[in-house]
Amino acid sequence: MRTIIMLIRWFVGLLFIFSGLIKANDPLGLSYKMQEFFEVWGWHFLNDYTLLFSLLMNVLEVVAGVAVIVGWRKRSISWILLLLIIFFTFLTGYALFSGKIKTCGCFGDCLPLTPAMSFGKDLLLLLLILILLFTNRKVPSMMSESGSVIYVVLSLFATAGLQWYVLKYLPIVDCLPYKKGNDITEQMKTPAGAIPDSFAIVFQYKKDGKDIFFDQTSFPADFDSTYEYVDRKDKLVKKGNGLTAKIIDFTLQNLSGADTTAAVFANTNPYVLVFAKDMGNAAEWSSKLSALKEKWAAKNITVSIVTADTEKAVTLFPGTTIVRCDATVIKTAARVNPTFFLMEGARVINKLSLSKADALIP
Image (cartoon, rainbow, N blue to C red):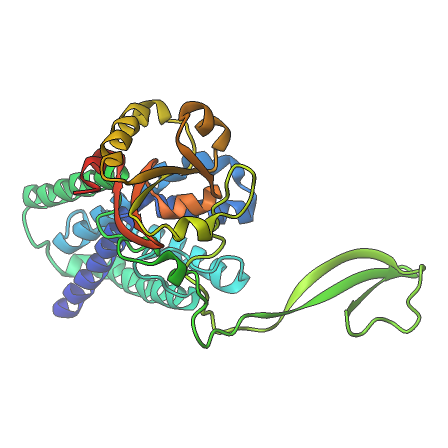
């Protein structure tokens, strides 16, 4: 019995540590996923706090995982794990049964799980944590109280330090489709064998006080002005196989609004794209960018700023090519504002944050 409980303790602990660390590698990714849930629920007022929630959640997962393995404060930690897994199970269940969230973000972008897989995982963890809650007295702690505290505190500072580093220097493991070595145009292609979801438009009208529903192929024979329009909805007719392009909605536009994506990627010489979602911190990096532009110009390397905040960019960076891109796309491509991409055609040759931009080009 003790062996089984110890194995459960290690399995649960390692899974929480893994889950916390893989999300701590990209805390902004988790914060964007939280915003997706809040947008669906209409909780827009929480959007400004999602990064804080993400940072705290990741630390809590890792610390709780370490604590359950070493057996520190077993009953209290078991209750914390139970509350966490109930919360996670609610989220994954909502994603699965509502269909409004495609992935729950349980393991970040590095290991995307379907809602069904995530929900099944959480149900298993829920069962195992309940077992630990009612059997924690049967297995002693692995070490003394002081030894356990040392491991717990070290895990707290290590996770916090990891998140500070990646927020400043980009994720250590880049799992995004814009990572170093990827060809953006290839990532924009729909995979072979992809079957999209099929939808039918369902209309809702009111006639003689009754709601009447029909699609575009079955209008009532007596349809006339006596039918009062109420609503229209897209009804899923056939589920696709889920295969989609890894990058969607990526376009670059010049200041006149013309699509210049192909022209930018047609550049045969290496060039630099500076992705900056907004110009909120531009004062901190404008002088460094000017120095880098001068340095790279000697190597015949041009620099363009890709931003959603083109008006401010034009004012702050006169003489620099400004390219417009959607802010959501930039948030995915560049976790740090700004992020420097060394490009060759559509291929990402190198990708560094402002703090390491000097090393972008050898």
